Length: 454
Image (cartoon, rainbow, N blue to C red):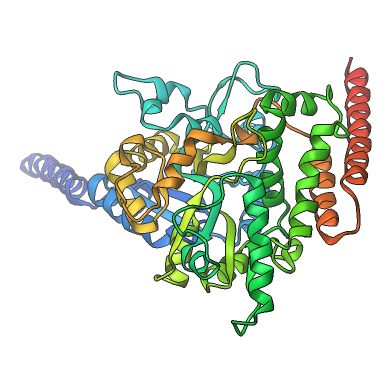
């Protein structure tokens, strides 16, 4: 009998010790690694990688959440990787879209990008109010958009860019020009081409001084230049009417736009080989003091600083052709991040992007990378950034912020045609005719598809 009671007592003691051991183990056992949240961010911005890593460290110290910034460059490689990841269903928590607005729209409609509207509008300190409208516009789809996307904001701008004209002040002095007075109209600009030709004839340098350098081997930069002058010559409404198919590319105003490239060629203002030049090469030529002008974006502040810290240059709006309409420049969000709608950490991803776009982090990014911040309160924080780039936002527009888009094949035909004009292979009239033929073919194809759907 005693043994029976002793056995019960022994079993109770063992059970008590077992529970106590488990309680202690559960209390002091470190959290499994699977419970540590890690956000993965893909990007293509080589000049920002070290700054991003520093910000990731700060965010971890603040929240305990890890952020892995994974760099894939150049941009073509990055764009291919994102498309492949979307097809394979393995996009990261946060990523960016490189492409036209229609590419952005296709990702949204496929369910890969989270609608951030509710987060942007939440509470009294609305997130959307932090940004310049031009920065937010490229990430927003209005109720009248032609892409079939639910109205909303789908991306967070990280920085801004404006693409303008840049000139070498020291070379202006050598050419007998006022280094504080860049050309304001297109005629003045062309006249400088003649001065450059005369200068080269004197053979005062070991190399041929170039006029305008830009990466016009990359069609988007030609398209940017042509688009600016189309808006200046005919106004944005007529440009939009052309995209809708109501105005042909053979219209006299479009002939005038295309003729500008012939005029620049004939004036000797364009650099040798500009139609095959990538922008990195153009940046190297300008930074080395071998070109008077460059057509480039505000990211060049950091690029030129790395190539030639002593480069003495200024920034100005592209010189006007017409006084009827304002000059336009491409501007808005230079880079933006989107949240993967299928991420299991999408709420955490949204919180991180809100933190990243807040004033303190924007100040740091601007200082570390010399890019214009997207946050309005930070825009003049970094005094190294040429203020003209920021002021260019007053003239900023961008096709990715418009509710309509031209057919890709039409844009390609127009831009390649401009290259042919510069090379002397085609006339402006020929390029206009060819572009309009492609436009009519694309419109007919679109109509046929719409009829088939009905």
